[in-house]
Length: 212
Image 1 (cartoon, rainbow, N blue to C red):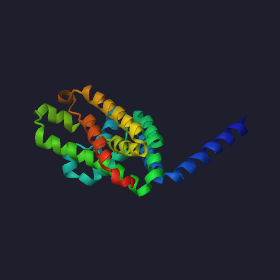
Image 2 (spheres, rainbow, N blue to C red):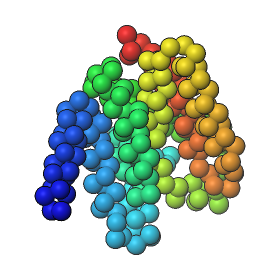
Image 3 (cartoon, rainbow, N blue to C red):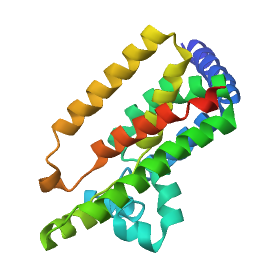
Image 4 (cartoon, rainbow, N blue to C red):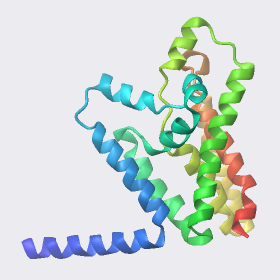
């Protein structure tokens, strides 16, 4: 039984190495996120939230250390988000990287992540009037993860499909994102992540030139 197990471990390991060679950015990003999530295991919920909040893209963090949180926020996620990370890596990011290349995928991911983060932050700064209590809630809102970049890459990857299928994928994605946004009580939670997902989806649609 040990030889059977070791043989299958080698098969899986060789497959992962081949997959990583074909999609190095996806593999590196996944590894960094998984390592960071692993570091959170064993911490108390309060300490875990404190670590994630350090890398969160709140308005105060964006004003004080914009580069640190803009890039760092994409490299951290809570443990319960690892399944989303795995699905994103295998369904969106790796196929896109194999199609348009590593550097264009990096550009698409950063455009979605940074673009959606900044646009939502600017919108909040310009139009949303927060009460003192809401401001305190928002300052403690954790906003980290790869979802903005992932949705931009997913929208971009759909360009590989023929028109009817492409439109179907976009329609399903948009319906899902709108449904998620409809469930959110923005005034109560002061969490505008669903809006960021919609913005990232739109950014992905605008990145069509990267596929040419």
